[in-house]
Amino acid sequence: MTRNMLSIAIADDQELVREGLPLLLEQVEGFQVVGLARDGYEALALASTGEPDLLLCDIRMPGMTGIEVARELKRAASTVRVVMLTTFDDLDFVEAALSAGACGFLLKGKPVDRTVESLRRMAHGEIIYATRHAQEAFRSLAGGGEHN
Image (cartoon, rainbow, N blue to C red; front, side, top):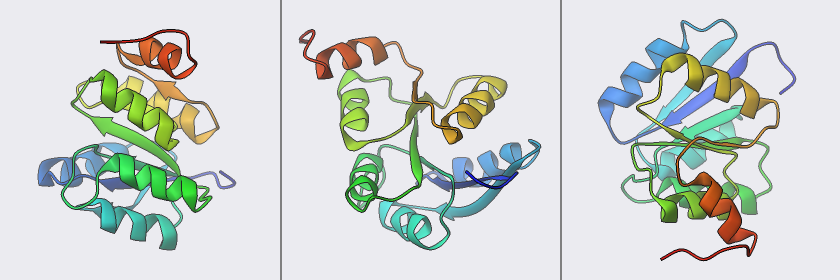
């Protein structure tokens, strides 16, 4: 991130999230929503043309999932940092997001101030997985444990 403004694109198949989240984020000093996508294909197009700093991506979307978007952007060596923003606190999703190269995994039900702080930190290079399954996923991917 080289600008004072943090540019964010949002990909979610739920209209309420696509229209409501930008209203919240645009009230935060230094945040600018630069694009909205209804599915993974639109998210890839936004990432390749608009070059947002962060792409907030729902995991379950029609056509192409958020995990697949992260995987494609990683394969393309994109500088866009992908954050999974979901309601699903599921170990398999957390592991898949980690493997796909997502820099974060945030739950939609968290307080806005914590989400905003996490987004700022991820834009500056941190990796944040704010779920109860995160530690287990990190151990599993590092070869330090199995899950059922």
